[in-house]
Image 1 (spheres, protein in one colour):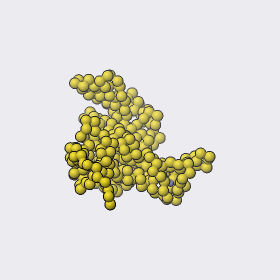
Image 2 (spheres, helix red, strand yellow):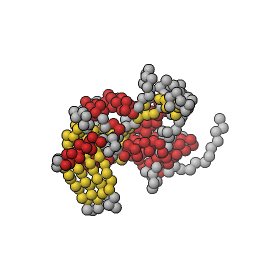
Image 3 (cartoon, protein in one colour):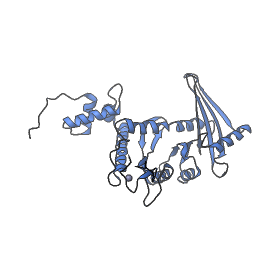
Length: 308
Ligand SMILES: [Zn+2]
């Protein structure tokens, strides 16, 4: 939600006190992803809005702490590797993940982690950085790994130590793609490939979650209105809930899968259109028959007038 006029006490404020003052509600989403699974499962999202009585704006860095705490509360026994953007590669977030008994893989970037890169370079000069290479001759690709364990995240405070993985992919066209992650998973020649696959599936969060929610008929970015207080946030929660139900169906319901994958180029938008048109024109006694009719086609019916 974003507006120049409509607001509540929970709204975050941009350009506070200025002429162009504006009000907004954001949301932080996270989901369960797996390197070899296309389907993602969203977890309960966390609203980014002013917390009760606070006069300060909320932000992603504060929201991630509530998000992690809520996830631990909701799924106390679930073993997770927390995959995060470089924004969160700091001591407090890492300490929290360790405290909950999870592992982490976090993007590290040159600009944000100068001392980490310096520490890596020093280790490299000392010959303490390991190298590993996987050549796939069939696909003409090369994976190059450079890694070191037990590196201080921050040179000012050396208590938090992490393992660092530099990775270069040379693709079929011999173009190089470079990544760097920090993790608490011990890096060896045997583990670097799995950690890399884990790190790279973060794009599924962007692609399969946020892009789907924005562009595949869920209209997450549409401004449905502010309401009195929590309406905008509740609309976003409902959108995530709808997405969760659809993802579970996509993962586990063969009839939904058939209905979705019927055309040569299946899109969710097409399926939503079909469902809507069937709902508006036909009496449907069960989800089974709805999905069956979409997958196999429904018999054309003569138009009938409502004479009641
Ligand atoms: Zn508000």
